Image 1 (cartoon, one colour):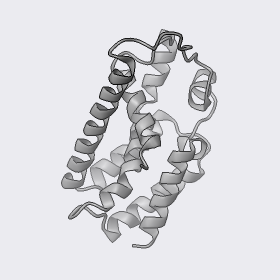
Image 2 (cartoon, rainbow, N blue to C red):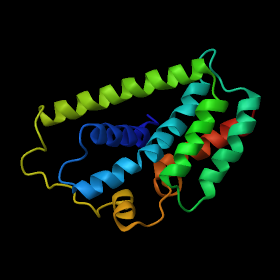
Image 3 (tube, one colour):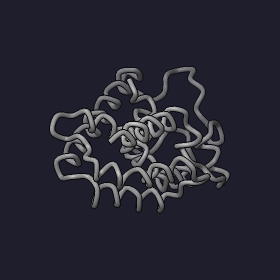
Image 4 (cartoon, rainbow, N blue to C red):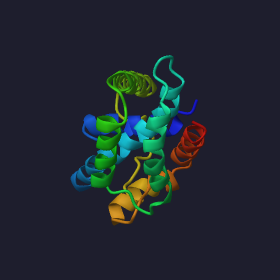
Length: 176
């Protein structure tokens, strides 16, 4: 399933909605919450190629031509700030996608968030982290480390799955 990177974004988004991942300082939770538009953009990009395969919802040539410059920019920029991600999302949602396409994407994202929540609850037995699990500390991993240290971070360059999804989407839209 292509959704590993998407699933990670969904799980992190769901965790933020439920108070954030365990064992994070309030400051780190606030920083992660500020990055929600970036996570939402990763999820949106991850769904666009699936959207294109849906009967009656395929992206048109005009939509592809409007999306390609945006996507190529995401591929090359060194840093993706939340405000920039929010602006890009607004452009995609407000002036490129149709209401029917947006509805499908919203429904699909909500369904996947619910599935991720159920899987997480089943894995944890409805409790907190499993006994003996070492809590993830801020500073471990690319995203957390970049956010904690205020370093530039672009998930479309630094997360292999997000980068692959973006590359595949650009290839798909370039053929239209």
